[in-house]
Length: 386
Image 1 (cartoon, rainbow, N blue to C red):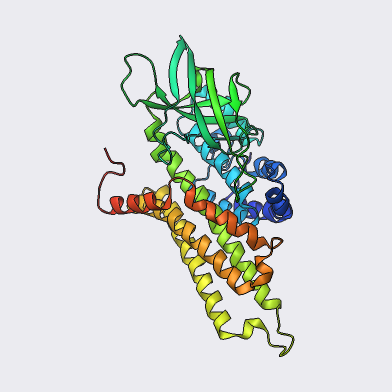
Image 2: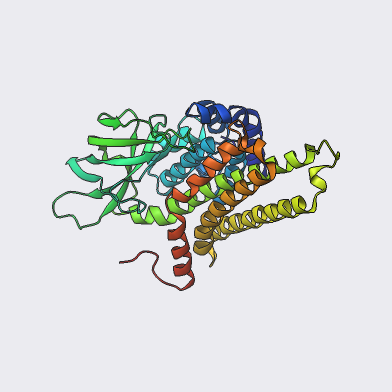
């Protein structure tokens, strides 16, 4: 994949969003369909967005993830989050990739030939996805065996590989030694649960994954044993937060635009007065625009700050997802109020946007946790309690 500048990458995302994602968004939602066409289009042209140039990728970082996520989130939040999880997992694999991992994963990812994703969450630990209970033990000189259950795996069964978090189970290993591995989709003893049925984000193909004596080569270990916490807070969390922030910023922007278009074209028949001429409508839409724009500025600032290691990086990243979550929900609700009964109908895009926006609050890290992290960052307190 040739080097593509950030502006060009975002333009490509907007083009794909308009030409491929938007036309299929309603069907993806109604049929709870994994958005294969949209993912393939994004993967083929932007699959290596965050992979270093030395492995054939574009070499971009958090700001690109946020801006591409906004472009795709405007068209279809399900497709956006599916592709976002590919970008996060790609960044995780690339962070400390060995030679074999570079050839096996990063080169085909950059060529648009490999889709990856995360398998971190577990029902036993809830939103604290950094504390996996999936067990990893040695099964031979160069083999590892995994046992456990992952929940809410996006792109489940469709991705070519999965970044899986584990805890050491060998006798004599230190307690709480967490590690990350890559598991290929065709590895024996992967058992998928039934598709998750949510009222929003219906196309993300989220499923439970049981790993039952799953054996992988030790070369699929990411970094060193015990590196999982480093991965979570240096790679997973920043990229995950930006992928979600971008997606739901796109949802908010889409709702704002839907309300604006409605107001521009509607007139009262008895007076021939345009809705756009009414001060209360102007005030409401102006307030919505300001909320979306200031949230966008926060997201982009946080991404840039994190890329340069700035002092406000942690507070900005945590606040970004929290602010976007609240902005998306508020702006969609305000758009529904402005559009009225037409917007409340099931065929309205706002119907889907409302359901998709609500999911942002329940995707870990949840809003309350992010607010606490922001406060701790500002007060120089440890992010996690002992």
